[in-house]
Length: 270
Ligand code: GLU
Image (cartoon, rainbow, N blue to C red; front, side, top):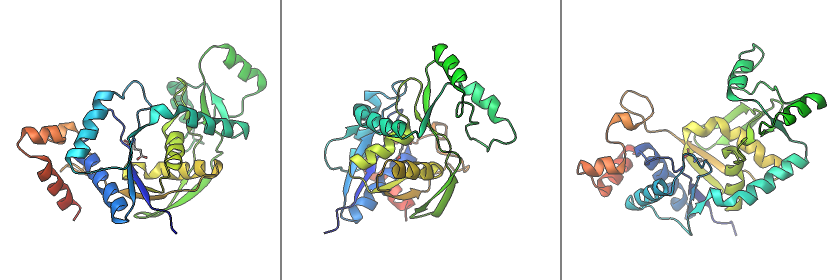
């Protein structure tokens, strides 16, 4: 028997969900439920600076008000550190990582060199000599951990975008404050939770080949990906607070209840 499809919505609890996020959540739910599948909610609260429990509770209340339901308890990414660390350990053991001491400013400056692809890590710490490495270790500056990717291209086939081929960068896998990075955690958690259908906003399509590559390196099956269009403001920019009533609370204050919001979102999806 074919295993049941499992989809998910994985918000970062950094503020209220706006109509764009809610529309993505509704689509993810529809994809999963229309396939007769399971639907999970995972709170991506890895960043202790921006994530709060109050924002998490408000987001979940909005999803419920919209009529979305999910299977099983909500999972918090911050409570899954051991799993993330086990995956990191595996990559370290296989020689697929290296420590990086660069500050943002050092990266910006080195990345201005003509041979560095736009937006890519310039490779400063990739091949340090033993002496250079020892000097950085002695400085006491905490190191991040990067993927030793070496610039290969990886292709995924997105359900909506078709083939997406991108160069995999030496992305950060663990930040220099010890927090596992999003690209690593998302791959580990999706697999551990049995998620095989990832429906999310189009803003993440470019990092998907990197996530596929991490799946391959960790021996995990790749999920399917569908990157859905973002809801845009009338001026074509990404929806934000400055565009007025963009959250459920804003709309409720104007007399638009959750049922009406759901109707508008559904209409916008055709
Ligand atoms: N937590 C991410 C966000 O809110 C989404 C991650 C994902 O769906 O893979 O943008």
